[in-house]
Image (cartoon, rainbow, N blue to C red):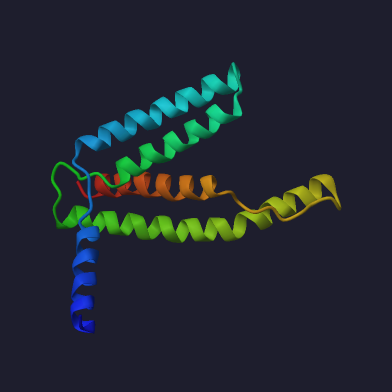
Length: 148
């Protein structure tokens, strides 16, 4: 096997991944899972307060947002693809900036509120993924409304 054939094979696999999108009805499934997860989180917080259930609900929220994020639109044209890429770019940049600044903002507030006991805390994986997916989904919807 030559290097050229390996590169061609890899290029084909990347093109397949580039076109990875779910059918449009998964968007409704994703929103339903997301709303069900939020309702479940509130019910859990005010009644049982089970930590394991809370983690499962958090995963449900992420899966719901992911389904919405990678689902096709009813009319998937070049404008929609461009808006989708803009929303992914914006979400990535906002997520990186937030992930870099938020620990220091927390440190400053902790320092002024509690004094010398303040430490720099790292953001959790769930917070970063939640931020990336929610910004992408909501910014994409915002861009679609702007271009109608």
